[in-house]
Image (cartoon, rainbow, N blue to C red; front, top):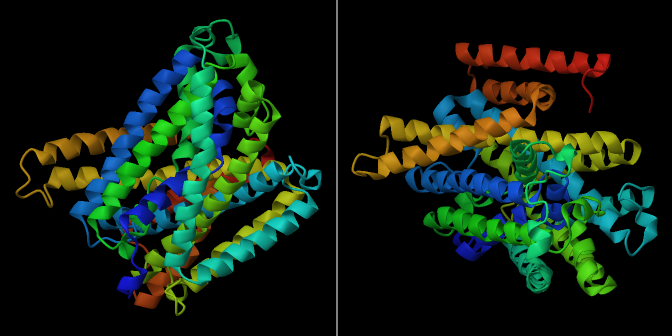
Length: 475
């Protein structure tokens, strides 16, 4: 049990959501979006993305309030609505996505430090990997001291990284020129961008990574001081981050033209500010990114361990992952997670291309848990479960959940067949842990429907393995 002194207040939960979402992505956003879309298409893309992700935030808020007994977020909704194997798959996929994301943050952090110290290069030199490994285990032992203490430090770093972002927005707003923003508004002069709808689709895919973490408060629901704070933290954190992302993106497009933005080196916010105020602007953003990544690393270290610990508590994962130390920290889950991060850091030393492709794979894998959460909200509203005296609220929640589900399906489709097959290759081995958990309970491993689903996953994994061997798929 988590005693009252270790409970997380609303501010800490909001910081977990914001800290999880605001990592390295926002600092590269101007270039990432400009490479895919013109200013006009960007506005359309943000409108669609904002509506889609807002409905997802409302889904997490609704589920937190209507199913307060379901602690652990994301995976537990899939399990409650669609069975043990779907719940396990959501937990497994989310966990893999989270720790691979941490590897990317490590590499980006030391790549940014390379701005000051060339020995770190692009973040994957031997020196960078050694230093990243030291940082990894420092974070590991910090978290072992207690979730509440780590969450407090995360709150401090979240506040600290908002300073350079706020300064960028103020300076960019002053330097913003409408004629630059409206120049080639629909990108017609650049045939490589494609049609407006192509631009919107490609630009929206970029936004998936910067929004991952929206579910942060839900995962820590069991540790919240007030259950109602979980939903509030999710919506407050999302709206704040959405406004931040749009302002950084749109204001940059009023300072440099699309072609100039798309050619910037990342973190591209540094190039934008340097254009306005000179070299000190680039240095400010680089320092801000370092602080931001440090905070995001801490947030995701907490999230990685918590997701498989929560799933082990209700026997979705094997028993050994339920072990806590005296500070109520899931030690075995933390050791397993950080051990794999360490292994993958070594892999990036020898194969940077594999790391980059797996980052996109990590993004696509997290869409599956998002889909099942939205689908569960639809299921509750259709059945009328928990809506016995809710009146018109049921129809409103059904509409929101349907929009969120359609958005999640579209994102899975947009990720492409390649990443769906490659994700099956990572989902398939997880069945070993699922089978172990079931054997510990003395239960059959799969139901009849789950057997069919597992066979489909195995077929996908087999195609992916052959594709990697034959060369029509690549990591």
